[in-house]
Image (cartoon, rainbow, N blue to C red; front, side):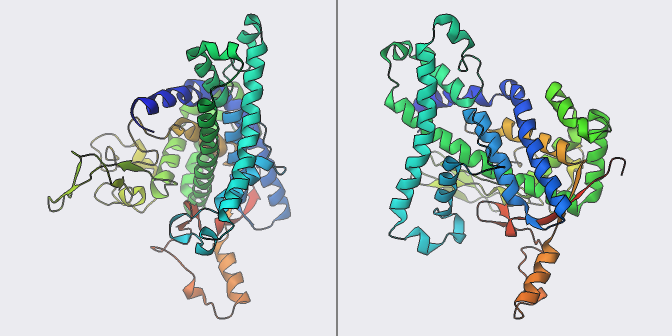
Amino acid sequence: MDGPEWKYWRNIFNPGFSASHLISLVPDIVRETTVFCELLQDHAREQDTFQMKDLTDNLAMDIIGKVVLDSDLNCQRRSNPMVNALRRQMRWMAFGSEGNPLQQYHPFQPFVHRYNTYHMNRYIQLDVDARFEMYRNASMSEKESSPIARNKSVIDLALNGYLKGNPNTSSSGRIDPIFKEIAINQMKLFLFSGHDTSSSTVCYIFYLLFVYPDVLSRLRAEHDNVLGLDPSQAATRISEEPYLLNQLPYTTAAIKESMRLFPAASTTRCGEPSFVITDPRNGLHYPADPSMLVWLVSHACQRDPAFWPRANEFLPERWLAKEGEKFCPTQGAWRPFEHGPRACIGKELSMLELKIVLCLVGKRFKVNAAYKELDAKVDRKEKKIKMGRIKTINGERAYQVGKGEPSAFLPCWVKKVELGA
């Protein structure tokens, strides 16, 4: 999709991800994060070791499901058929070099893909049809108070924008099949990308706060200053005064620094006849015609010492540096959401939910990475595997795998922090 067609559909979906609209959804995000904290409390009580990515996947899915569909998926507490189909689909897809070729070229793969697609499409289609029917059958006064008019979710806003631009559709009693197809595909895309990237980022923030306890201490001090000393009241304060989240510069810096070190996604762009990539080291020009895809590797760019002093260190303070100071970020070198008109539509949502998670979890729990325990367990179980052979990349045990998540899905254990500790 390109040109005017892309602009039209981007404008249809943009309102659901605007900062002014998302702030109204803060109580919903807080509610889902509170469930997440209850699950962490259970693990702290059991004193067990678990994979954090499993919990953050479900948290992020519940949040994006509420934002996109205004639906209580409740993945953190129970199984959901649409989410199950989405995750089965993901397991049958190849990501990078770690895709399973036996699965990728399995003769059943097309049938599995079709089966999962049917269940995802049916779930979302029934939701879209129900909202359209409700709006079509409502009187003018009722339309003003309908869920669509209240602008509650992305699909509501998209449908509202579509109906305003196509007033005859409501009276005809039938949604344009092109709109329905694009809307369903976009909802699936939002659910996939909106939960997977946020989930991995939450894991890495927890991991980095474990490795850098001084950053965690400063983060907690900021939360004390803005939200009060009692962490049990943080959820209420944020729900009632969501703009407090704009008063957390160090928390924002820690999130950005985590995304710099461990970007959860990257993107490609189509080449153009006049587009040329120039190597600054030798001046060589590399043309990128329309048959090529240009991929900027965020992980390499965001760890390049030419742009980032002490590039491999977790230094949130660099995001508080003023222009001209040593650690001030180089403009354009931070690209977890990319730049320009095609930048990630969910940037504001991602930053919002990450702040809320840190505010509700940071003071109440200490997340401890359990790679040493995992590696020792492997060493005892398989005598042939020695500790020196445990895989690391650039000395990092929590290296990124698959779709950008930490290795072994961040094994960890959680400790409840007592008030005043």
